[in-house]
Image (cartoon, rainbow, N blue to C red; front, side, top):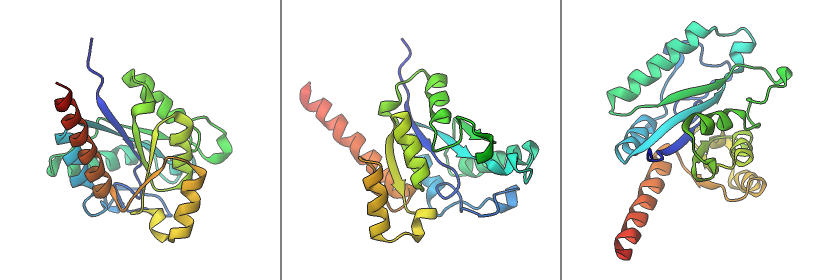
Length: 199
């Protein structure tokens, strides 16, 4: 039987790269969040497989075409590779809210597809978000919700963050993807130590 990979799901804009209201339309508009790519690399080196799940309504709105999307993601992967990191795949919803699809977050369609593709139970899969909408998608899919305050959540105060967490119970809050990575690696260490104690 194939071992189940340690899989985590990341949002893209605001988590890996700086969020833009007008969408990232070309590689030169894609700027990594400081420390985010190194965080992915650290997780990769600890055995984690990372995939991206992202709403990209700029496609449906005609603001960006597929060639440009592919160019952005190729650039993103090159930047990750330069620091020793990698993404297994990028799953994206190209639709606008008016399309009423089932893959646009906060609906769980993208995550369900990821679970199907990997043949794993999403209940053990951490999902990193920077908005309530994405946390709701994580919850709807059964993923473990994590909020990072490096993107759109950076503009929120403690009270607003608390209200988001109230709406999606069990959400863990981290300052950025680096802090999330530190949390996951620390948790891995505790689990390995516990297994060692049982032997």
